[in-house]
Image (cartoon, rainbow over all chains, first blue to last red; front, side, top):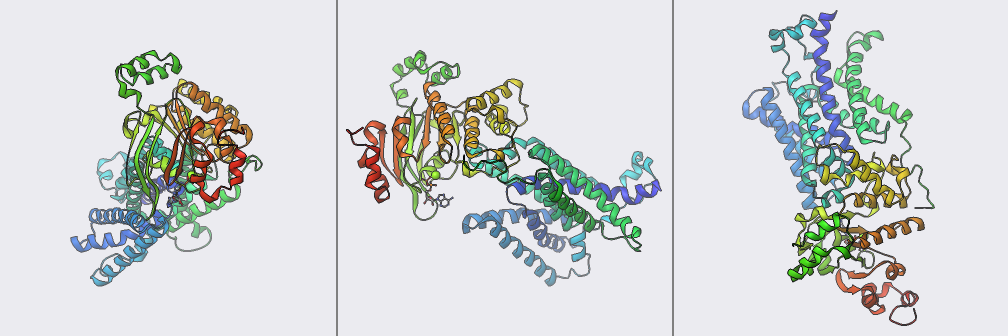
Length: 311
Length: 285
Ligand SMILES: Nc1ncnc2c1ncn2[C@@H]1O[C@H](COP(=O)(O)OP(=O)(O)O)[C@@H](O)[C@H]1O
Ligand SMILES: [Mg+2]
């Protein structure tokens, strides 16, 4: 039983946790900046990047795919900025223009080139392949101390762990500038904070998290995790510090419960097959948000306690 | 004997009158006396094709309360933001205490228009005031107890101590404005730039804010407010700057805040009756 858990479930759960946390952390700030859809945008624009990487290298090596996807994400962020500035249109529209055209470009590229033979299908893009990221060499918990077994961990695990660690570190180090410039951009500029660089850094960090997670667990988790845990966390507290901790907790909870429900839930209900773990993780995060909307202590926010006569 | 002595004296808490070292310095360097806390030359800002602020010169005096006055959309907020480098300018020079703005940021406190931020933001009153300490704390240093005490003292000055742990959305407009002022106080600046600090606040808050601003003046600091209430200009301010895209007039309230200048600033938008009520133009008051 234990050996089976370590072999089949431990790595997918850990990867799901790291991916969820890496996306939820920047999601807190993106939501407060009204940029939540950037996660959605990024997960669409990585398609042309992946196709180009495939065309250039002729293979589906993870590293090339990651670089292609990351390049596309950064390009998209720059394009969105450029469209916003030059076209003088609102950010949402700029995002829409860029990500639909890049996604369309990706589909065109995919059609024009002979990539149909490889595993570049929509199913993979959406759901990833979390269940297949198993640890063949593991014989049980003791394998965690066995260098030979550790060397055979799926690549996605150390990569996702590293990205998650970097995101956590960046969030901690740049906490104050992030918070100040998210709350009051004018004040932040007046005290000399590099507001544009902070905003760009945040979006690039989100893009890196999204791309890494996209590769391991598919875009559906990315989109869900940027929005659901932070939005649910906001309903639990009125302090940003606590909100971010809540969002991490919710992300972990969604990853674990989602994986377990996907694997065992259908059996409990008499079904024969497990359902997609990625889809279930996203669904659980949505469920958590729904519960927070119904029962969160900080739901009544706007205008609460305000005395209209005084305003 | 450099102009920065003035700052040193102020940080030591000396009133302006006792700042002998600075007075000596000014005697030795006559140009130092001309160093306005905020001096703007040829500032032009445009959001689209038409400039919002056109070729504006302004020189605000030290140790005084100054008002920037003009009709809605006259470019008052734009003038402040462009002077601070918050929005880009097409042309113009800005100096703060005789130095380029980026070298003087530690001496400036800016209070944006209250409506410019999302008051639903998950943060507490004390947290917002602590943002004024950022330049001192930097990225990672934890707030020490004396810094916390300083932030609380700033809250005390605006009468908001009891609200330190409140979420900022659960305050009235006047209370929110006081929190913004407390954040500016926490910065310990020499030049305070406030955008409509009296807009939409209750009478008690208005009194509290003007008292704080007057105490800043008494400490020898410069305060510049965008102001919309013409009836309080004479009782609150020493210096006025009238703007309607271009500079209309600038100078001491007594000589500059006149019916003629107001007419030129507001055009037809200010009925003659309003100006009459202000009893300006030497005499009736
Ligand atoms: N972000 C902006 N984009 C486009 N136009 C703006 C923007 N901010 C202000 N304006 C325009 O610039 C002019 C000056 O605005 P503002 O400085 O806010 O005026 P005031 O503070 O004197 O009421 C107005 O016509 C206003 O509509
Ligand atoms: Mg304004």
